[in-house]
Image (cartoon, rainbow, N blue to C red; front, side, top):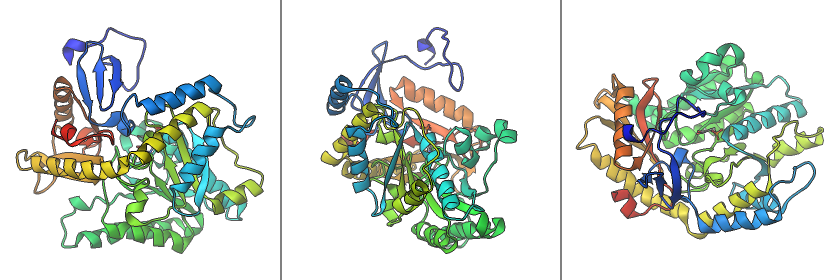
Length: 429
Ligand code: PLP
């Protein structure tokens, strides 16, 4: 990548920018300004679910632009927002049909927690305010979402400013070296939620938030089946709301619209973003059980909102994205191509002993680097390996996504999540 360092710029994000400059993108490919082509093997940050420059979405956006791009939600209703809310509700488990639009994943998570809290207050349960989360986990970068996020590197500088929430270990059953079966391990991890609720005092616990298929924090972690049902039972036992953060796993990426469907679980609130707007517009949604929303509206209204929420242009884009997913059976494709990609990645384990695990569902897949597969010891210099692997992939025209996990720095796992339009040929590539 060293030969394509862009000139110094006023921009900064995590660090000084040293990435090629994007020129254009189409389907699963992106081109930089030198004309070099990249296979978008991670859909950006698991965002571009239907690929780039989809003509139907672009046409819908152009048509909407000719009518209006913005109407403040407290001044006007708009048709794309109403229609998108209807469509989303039709794709949700029964009763989960109240939709609140936002512009991203952190906003969706914040909205979920604030709705939960206002529901508790409106229903005479004001002592409930703690939202138990998992470690590791990622729920967003704003302060509320960060208070739930279990990633020390993201939270540490802000700890004096944060009211951090209680956390239980994420169900990393694949790392355990005990005599239990996977299903027994799943129950053991779920049991930790019950213990934590009792430790905190059930009357103080408002909710439990989890990514049903992990994302950046755990690298597409999937728990044993037993975990999901038991977590739901425990929440019900104590009147604790179950919040599914499906910002990454939702909108079809795992092969079903919600990952929750794989286990037949009905969460009380769901956060969606990323593939929901699929990179065409910043868009997200908090979808809640009507039994939570109605008391809040009756008690005077949801004290929360973002200026750009539900704007007609973002909703028109989202509507076209979801229609594209449904009309072309892209969820079925994610399931089929995901299974193929997973088996190909698993096949690489025979050649590369440093691949310790391949996991995930649909096209939300990851592989983990280890020093020793038997003991699953993390790579001692995972970050160095990460830098080399990412550079090498860039040179070869492939984009993959890495995040911090066990070793605490970037590099332990790589997410492999091409757009849901990917074909067998792209998997081979
Ligand atoms: N929740 C999950 C599971 C995520 O993966 C992310 C982003 O990576 C977020 C929340 C935050 O989303 P955003 O970056 O759009 O605010």
